[in-house]
Length: 482
Image 1 (cartoon, one colour):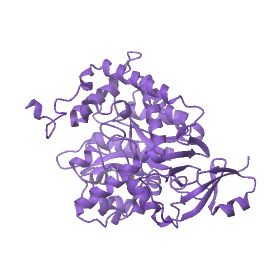
Image 2 (cartoon, rainbow, N blue to C red):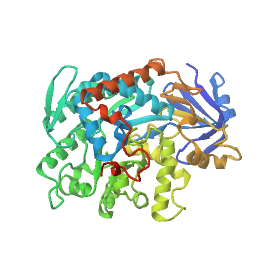
Image 3 (spheres, helix red, strand yellow):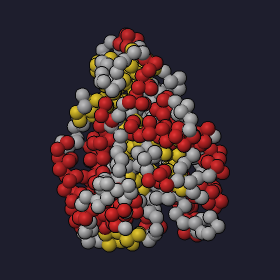
Image 4 (tube, one colour):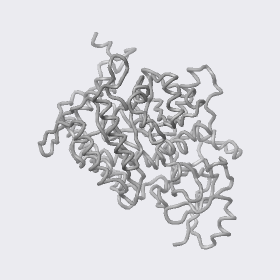
C-alpha cells in the first residue's frame, strides 16, 4: 500500500528536538510513522502517497492517559461523588452488581469518550480496585477499546482488603478472592489478553496498592510483603510493567522489604502524602508518577509534583477515570495541574506549556514503559496521531507557530479534537467515529444506560440517583443532615 501523508497544519512533534513544523506533515506507512517533515519534502520522497488534508489543524501525538478506572463511566455523579459514600457504593456495584454486560457497556462508553478527547493510549484498572475473581470481566472491559481501535493497558492484580467477596450476578457464583486467587486470575488475564488486537491491548500487573497494609511502625505487614514479592516475580517473569496506587509511607515500606520492585518498570498513581525521602527513592530508582490533579486523593493530601520533577522523577498527568466528578478530557486537566502547583507555590512561572504537553505525551508513555512506541511523532514509532481544529474563537487568532503549544495547553480541550489515528488506522474523522468494528454512538449510549440501571438496581442503589439534599444552598455536603 502507498504511504499516507497527513498535511495541512502545524505539526507538534514532541520529538527529541521538540520540533514544531509550520507547515508540517506526517507520512504514515502501515502501522508506523515513516517520516515527519515539511510537506514538500515528504511528497517529493513519496509521490504516490495518499493525502489527508488537515488544513488549519494542529497535528500532534495521541494523548496518553496513564491512570484510570474501568467502571467509572457508569458510576459518575452517583451520590454527587461525595467521598467515602460514593466509593462504598461503587465497590458494591463493581464486585457484586456487575456482570460481563456491565463491563462491555462501560468499556465502550469509556473508549468512545477517550477517543473523542484525543486519548489514543490509556490504562484502566478493572474497577476501583481490580476485579479478579474471573478473567472474563477484564476481557469484557477491554472490548470497547478493541472495537474503537485504541491502544489500551488492562491493569489487574490483587485488590485491597483481601480476602474480597465477589458475586457474578449473571451466574450466581460467589468467590472469596485471596492473594493466590488474585495472582492466578491475573496470569490467566495475561494469557488471554496481552498482545490482543494486533498488540494494541496489553496487560499491566497492577495491585490496587503498592503496600496495602502497614503496621504501626510504617513497615509492610507479612501479607503486604507476600503481595510485593508475587507481583514483582510475575512482572519480571512476564516482562511487564507494574502499576499501583501509592500513598504516604508506601514507597518507604516497599523499599525496606522488597526494594526490587522499585525500578523503571514501576509507575505509581496519586502519590499523595509522599515525603521528600520517598520522592528521592523514586528518582534514584526510576519510578514514575501518574498525577491526577482532580482526584479526591490530591484534595486530601498533595503530591509534591514540582519537587519530584526537579529531582528527575518522570511525572505524567492523568485523569484517574471519569468518576465521580471528572472526565477523560486529559487536555483540560493538564492546565488544572499547572494552576494547582502555581497556587500552592505562589509562583506563576511554574509549568511551562511545553512541559505540560510532555506530561500527557512522551512522559506519560515513558511512565508506562512505552517510550519507544508512542508519545511523539518520530519515524519508526507507532502511527498514533491526533489533530486539533485551530479555527475557533477559543484558539484564535492564529498568529505564529511559536504560539501553537501554549494555545493548545491553555485553551484546547477534547471537544477540539477532530481527527485520530491509531496504528495507522483512522478512528475519528471530522469529529465522527469511523472505527469499522465499533457500535454506533447511539447504541453505546443506550447500552450504557441500561447496564448502569441494572447494576444499580442489583445492589439496591436507586437512592444514589436522587438529587443530593445539599445540592442547593449548602456550603458543604453533609450540612442538610446535621
